[in-house]
Image 1 (cartoon, rainbow, N blue to C red):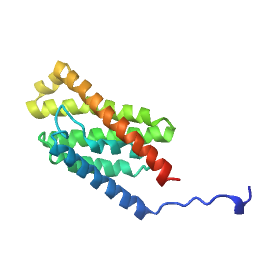
Image 2 (cartoon, rainbow, N blue to C red):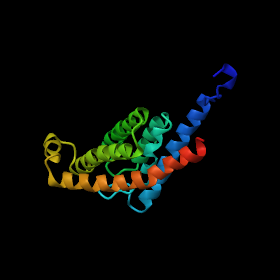
Image 3 (tube, rainbow, N blue to C red):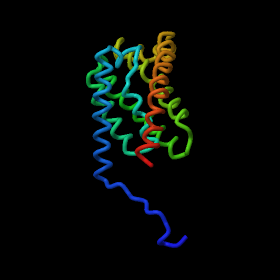
Image 4 (cartoon, one colour):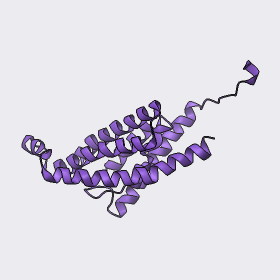
Length: 181
C-alpha cells in the first residue's frame, strides 16, 4: 500500500480528551446523586446508574481519571464520610485501571464488568461496615471474617454486575457502533 492509499487516522486533540474527562466526571456525579434520590447510591443496596459508565476506559483511557474524580465528588455526599472518600475512590481507581488493562489486552466487556463487580464487592462492604463501626484496629480485623461482610459482598456483586453488564455493555457497544465508526 503506497503512502497515498493509506487511510488517514485522525488523532484527537488533548482538548477533546480533557473535555471528555470533565463531562464523564460530571455525568457520573449527576447519575450518582440521581440514584441517591431513590436511596440507591450508598449502603448495602446499591444500584448506581453511574456505574454503567465504568466500562468507558475500554474505549477512552482518559476516562479512568474522569470517573475517579467523579467518584470522589459523588462520595463527598456519602454517609460514611472520609472512609468512603479514600477507600471508595481508591477502589474505583483500581477497578477502572483494571478495565483499561482489560481493554488493552483485547478481552471482552463481560470480563471488564466482572472485574468492576468483584473490586466493588470486596471494597464497598468494608466501607459500609467500617463507616458504621468506626475505625479501630479491632473493628478492621473483624470485618473480613464477618458473615455480614460476605453477605454484603454477595449482594453488592450482584447489584454491581447487573448495572455494569446490562446498562454498561450496551452503552459501550452503542458508542463503538455509532460514535467511533
